[in-house]
Image 1 (cartoon, rainbow, N blue to C red):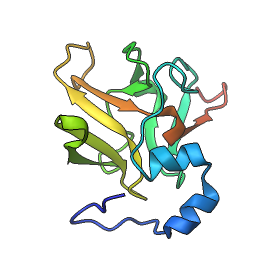
Image 2 (cartoon, one colour):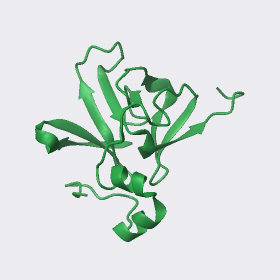
Image 3 (cartoon, rainbow, N blue to C red):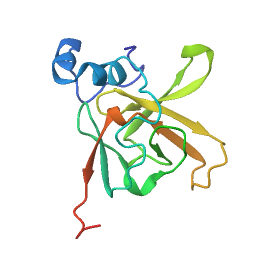
Image 4 (cartoon, one colour):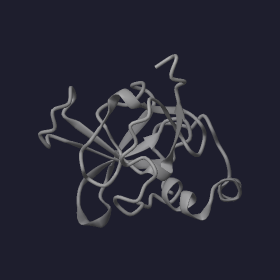
Length: 144
């Protein structure tokens, strides 16, 4: 994966270490900027209250209270868990200009963010994130 210019990840591992820790499918998305198929991801329709962590390093990236139904085929959020939780960079792959979303902690690929699509969210943004890039940690019902 192309390194992020101007910032160093907090979690640094060799590609060999990443391959040993991640499944081939996880590696393809998280470390090679792949995309899972739409409407098949584990969290596409999940309504469970909790925290979404980066599947590669465990950093908190999104919370369930910012997840919304966009019907796009991937989990959608309108805001990261913390303004420093993700990095954004221009992605000109596939002949179009998009904004790639990366985990700020390990620089793994999470998905893309889109603006101005007309969703009724506080930010007018849709963080379109691969389910395979995340792990949901449910909040016990007594705390929800």
